[in-house]
Image 1 (cartoon, rainbow, N blue to C red):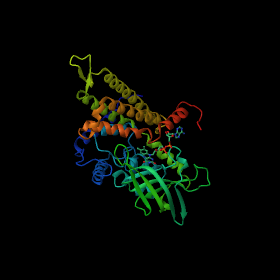
Image 2 (cartoon, rainbow, N blue to C red):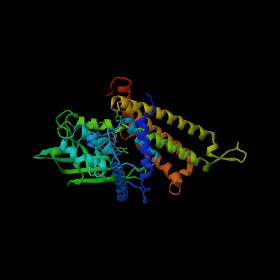
Image 3 (cartoon, protein in one colour):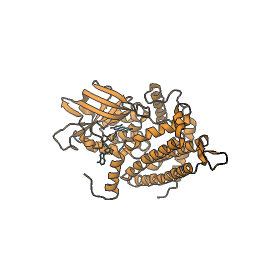
Image 4 (cartoon, rainbow, N blue to C red):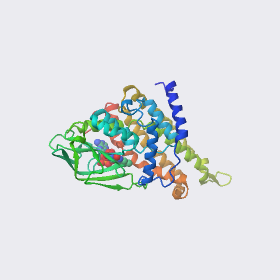
Amino acid sequence: MDLTLSPSERAFRDELRAWLASNLPEPFAGQAHSEDRDYLEYLRAWQRRLFEAGYSGLTWPAAFGGRGATPVEQSLFVEEMARAKAPDVVGAIGIGLIGPTIIAIGSDEQKAAYLEPILSGDQIWCQGFSEPDSGSDLASLATRAVRDGDDFIVNGQKIWTSYAHVADYCFLLVRTDSAAQKHKGITCLLVDMKSEGITVKPLRMMSGDAAFNEIFFSDVRVPAGQVLGEIDGGWRVAITALMNERANLGAAVRVMLARFLETLIAALPEIPRPSSSHPSGSMSAAEDPLVRQKIAQAHLDLEVFGMTADRALARVATDGVPGPEGSILKLFWSELNQRMTQGAMEIAGPYAQLADEQEVWGEISYAYLRARGNTIEAGTSEVLRNIIAERVLGFPKSY
Ligand SMILES: Cc1cc2nc3c(=O)[nH]c(=O)nc-3n(C[C@H](O)[C@H](O)[C@H](O)COP(=O)(O)OP(=O)(O)OC[C@H]3O[C@@H](n4cnc5c(N)ncnc54)[C@H](O)[C@@H]3O)c2cc1C
């Protein structure tokens, strides 16, 4: 693949960079916490500003409010946002996963009702797939929907649902035919989170965030017009959504990990290390040969990750879909993030305990704790290895 940017890609990047330089909001004044309503409004306002400038849903077709941008332009967008330290896009699940699925499968009414509010941030969506007994084996899900006149009545429980505590809508998978083969009796419903009978209970992660939740459905009425795709055809809808989930992570992760490494390197001189070989009997972590080896290894890993991200991007640019290479990328960055943050904690030693006093240590210990979930969310490492073995390397199917 030729990695040189074309003149139009360079122009796109430069225009975006200039726009970000003059449009980034001031950092949020309070505690940037996922449960804080003011923070949510701050993030919604940021997404509206992106939308009004034509930077929301770049790869969506222009007919649905996007720009019809190429995967390379989308990758440049994500990279520039990370480089500028722009606030998160709070409606990322809607833009990245749910909107494209509604475009591919939804009715005209559904497109008219949901696409523009997803882009503008007026509607935040969550993805109600996982259940207490159904994660990697998603097709075993048990939340039931039974037809009653013009409605479905939903009963059951979802878990680990990111953003459910702030979401306006849920992209929900339910079982509509228990007698059918497990992949064949599933339906996708677009559910208003204000419906009677829905209870959301936040779950706190060890990083301190309560960014994901349990959702309980008790006799929730959902109009039949809210079925996305065919009744009992929800597996195709789920696969369409999941195909989009792992795409486009590479560019942002590359910048974020490089920044993390820079932060760590800048903090090294502050960390003393005892040393019998040094004339003063002590040295900083920056002079410690073992620390220097760890940093060099992290740098090398990042370079290799960058090349892997380029390879996945080349695949999307050629085929229009992420393909199984998206699994290699997700596996690589999630495990690399854990190695890097674990290495940073080992280097910091007791300094990591100063998280409440100094921003740099807070950043490092938060990143370490949050990274643990990376190898579970959007496909566990074991499941991704199975996909790579079977679909990239051609191994026989596992049971
Ligand atoms: C931060 C975070 C955010 C999340 N957000 C959402 C969300 O918004 N919406 C949502 O629906 N879900 C969400 N999830 C849930 C996530 O999708 C599931 O946790 C994941 O699919 C794994 O399912 P499970 O937890 O039930 O584990 P299980 O599937 O029970 O797996 C348990 C262990 O068994 C291993 N295993 C399972 N099957 C196989 C196999 N075939 N071969 C080898 N090993 C196997 C797994 O790798 C794992 O180690 C989120 C999770 C996290 C951590």
